[in-house]
Image 1: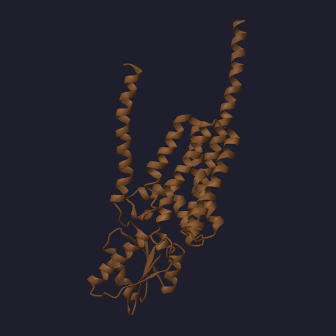
Image 2: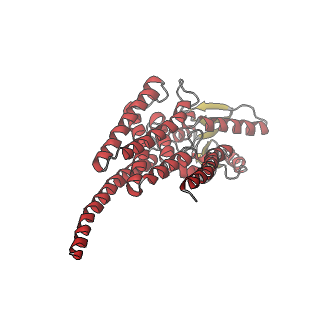
Image 3: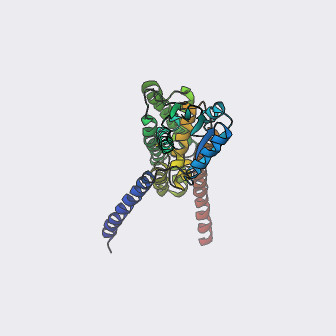
Amino acid sequence: MPSRSRRVIAVVVLVPVLAALALWAFAWPASRISPRDLPLGVAGPSAAVTRLERQLERHEGAFEVHRYADEAAARDAVEDRSVYGAVVVTPQGPELLTASAAGPAVAQFLQQALARQAAAAGDTRVRTVDVVPTPASDPRGAVLNAAVLPLALAGIAAGAVVTLLGLRGVRAALALLGASALVGVAAAGIAHSWLGALTGDWWAEAAVLALSTLAVGGAVAGLAALVGPAGTGIAAATVMLLGNPFSGATSAPQMLPEPAGAIGQWLPPGAGTTLLRSVSYFDGAAATGPALTLTWWATLGLGAVLLGDALRARKAGGEPAADRRELSAVG
C-alpha cells in the first residue's frame, strides 16, 4: 500500500478516536458530578448531632463526616480546608457554614442539600454563612476556573517551543524557568491586579502560577528529550485530556467520579488549581500536598531535560570511537 494511502487511513481513523477520547474525558466527569466522601463537618449538642449524622449516612458514600465541639471549631475547620462546609445545630435551627472560595458549585450543592433535608423535617429555617467567600469581583469563581486551560496551554507551548528550537540541557532548563516565571507574573497581573479575582499575596500567587506552568512545560520538554518528538504529543495529550477535565476546577475533586478526582490531583492542572485556591483565599491552608506535586513534576521534567542532553552527548561521543574501531579492524 502506498505511503500516502496509509497516511490517509491513519488520519481517518486517528481523528475520530481522538475526538471520542476527548469527548469521554470532558463529558464523563461533567455528567457524573455528585459528592463522593465530600468532607463535611457537624457541630452542636451531642444528641442533635447524632441524629444529623444518621440523616447524612442515608446518602451512602456521599459525605465524610467530621464532628466538632462547637461552631468555632467547625468554622476553623472550614477555614483550614479540612472540610468544605459544616452544619451547626442551633436552638434557632440548622446553620450551614460554607466556603464558596473552595468551590462555588460545592457551596451551592450543600445549600440545596441542607434545604431539602430541612424541608423534609418540617424546618424551613436554614441560615447560611459563607465563611470564606469568593471575591465580589468574581462571585462565581469563573476567572480561576477559566485559568486552568490557558496555563496548561502555556506550559505545553513552552515545552514544545524549547524542543522545536533545539534547546538542550542547561539552556533548555533556563528557557523553561524564564518563560514560566514570566507567565506567572503576567497571569497574576491579570487575575489579581486587573480582574481582582485573586485576593492573596501577589507574589505567592505569581509563584504558584509559574510553578504550574513549569510543571507542564518541564514534562513536555523532558519527555521529548528522552523519547523524541512523540514525547511532546504524549505529555500534551495527558495534560489536555486528563489533567484539565479531571482537575475539579469547576467543582471539587470529591465531586468527580472515581478515580478521576484522585488522578486529577496528581496532574499539574488539578494540583495547580488546588494550590492557587489555598494561597489566594485560605492563607496557604492545605497547600503542602499540591505544592509537592507540582514541584515533583517540575523537578522530574527539568531532570529529564538534562538527562536527555547527557544521553545524547554520550551517544554522539561514542559513535566516532566505534567508527575508529571499525576502520582499524578493516585496516
